[in-house]
Image (cartoon, rainbow, N blue to C red; front, top):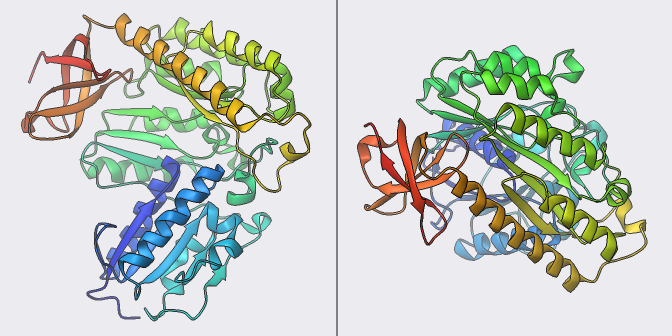
Length: 435
C-alpha cells in the first residue's frame, strides 16, 4: 500500500474516549506517510468515528457520512466506532460508504485500506462483543494544553437503557505501569493537563489485580503534568480513599463527574444501576467535606421507560437539594436490543424533552450559584484556547470557565487569576495576578 502524498480527514463524534482513539488512529496514518487535513477539505480518505449513544447520535453520524461522500465522491469513506459496531447493515445502505469497521477492527484500519479504490458495495468488518477483549492504548494530541488519556475500555455493567457493552465489549485496561508510561509520553510533549477517560474508569485494573486508586497514586508522581481531571466515574466505584487522596494530591484537580442517571430509587432499580441514591448522596457529601470548593458534574437521563410523573418529581427534588455544580441532562432515547424496551410506561417524547429542559434550567442555576461562590477568589488557570486575538479562555482547577484579554505568553502556562465577576455569556472575568 502506497500512502505517500495521500490525504486523510477524521470526524469524531461522541465521547472523550472516541477523541483519544481518533488521535491514535491519526498518528498511525501519519506514521505511514499520510497527511492529515481538515474534514472540510478534500481528502483521499475520510474516517467518521461514530457514536450511537442516542438516536440523535445515529442521525448525526449519517449526516457526517453523507457530507464526506459529497465532498469527494472518489474518496475512500470509512465508518468506525460504536454506530459501525451496532448498526453496520444500516450504514451499508448509504451509497458511497466503502468500509465499516467495528470496535476492534478500527485499530487495524491500515490493513483494510490495501488501496484507495472505491468499493462497489460497503465491506463490513466487525467482531462479536464477547470477542472484543484486547485493550488499545490511546491519547488525544493537538491541543496545546490538555489531552484525553484512555485508561479503560468496555463495561461489565448492563444497565437496561445502555448499548455500550454491546458496542465496546467487556471491561478491560492496561497495567498501572504501562498507563504511567503513556502519561510520561504526554508530559514529554509539553501538555499540561490530562483528563483520564474510559467507559467505566473506576473499574480500572480489576482483572490485573490492580485498582483505579493504584493508578491515581502512580500518576500523581509523573513529573511535567500540572494537573489531572478524573472523567466520569461510577458513584459505587468512587471510594473514600480516592476522594481523600485527591484532596491532598499534588496534581489532581478538585473536579469530579459522577453519573447519577436518576434521583429516584425506583427508576435506578428499573435501570439496574449498581447503587441507590443514598450512595450518590454520600459521595457528594464526602467530596464537599474533603474538598469544599470542588466542582461536581452529574449525568441525568430524563423520561426513561417507567419514569412516572411522581418518580421524576422525586428525582428532580433530590437533585435540586444536592450540592452539585452542573447537570449533563438529556432525554431518554430507545436503543435496540436493550432491556429498557421491555419496561412498561413509555414516556411521551415531548414530555421527555420537557423534563430534560427543566433539568437544564436547574443546571444553569446551579452552575451560576457555583460560580458566584468563588467570585473574589484567586485560583490557578491554564489558558488553553482563544476565540480571536482579543480574548482567551481557560479553566480554574475547580472547573470555573474564565476569560481574559488575549496574551500569547500566557498560553499553556499555569497562571494565578482573580475571579472578578460573571459576564453576560456566563463565563467569569479573570484578572491576571502573576505572569
